[in-house]
Image (cartoon, rainbow, N blue to C red; front, side, top):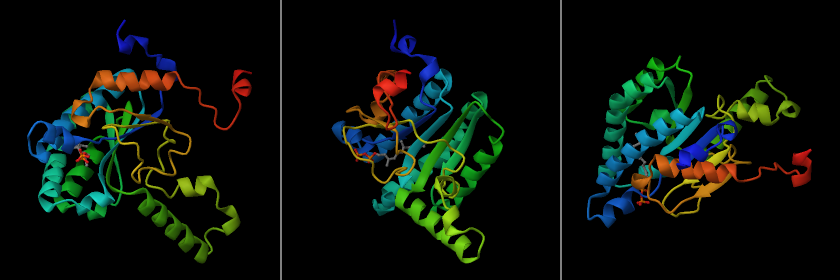
Length: 247
Ligand code: FPP
């Protein structure tokens, strides 16, 4: 039986989020420039997007560029931005064919105009697709997102649009970039690092965490299915006892 056959389609994560790490180390281990690692990494993006659509995961969120990544050498930033535009262009057909809706979270205004425009075009072209929502986190930082949320809600309080006693989790959710997405069920990070790196801090409150040593450019469908199988063998208690869940 293949790993895919062992997966129970009725208990898949509704929302899978991935920290795609290790592109640079993959390239270095092969004596290549870091940028080659990102190019190879974009092939893993395609594999994982197709794998999730095939198996029936409705929400996939990928951490493609963090607010901290702006501190990388300009040459690498330029290549990553170029790669994003070309990937969006190249994969628009795959998104349509698989009925996938593209979404983006982060401070998108910080992106170069060309990337921003291309992104909005593909988002618009795929907006009625409904098999899966693929969210790309770009110029994304969770603390920036939370700060933005606090500022927006504070303005509403100041203008008497909302009273402090009405602020609850739903109000906060509705001001996050992820307002249309459910909480994350499974967070995967590749490359052996075991950190969250400012990704979806609010949204992963009850997520299962899965870390693998595989570098992102080597992460293929089989690796995705292994992560899903591992998730299915866990008991998610949400603060309750094991006995309560069995009732
Ligand atoms: C982390 O590896 C990866 C990134 C910062 C970029 C991820 C981008 C892609 C996979 C390119 C295509 C993306 C899309 C959505 C089409 P790293 O450079 O931090 O690796 P290292 O830790 O080994 O140096």
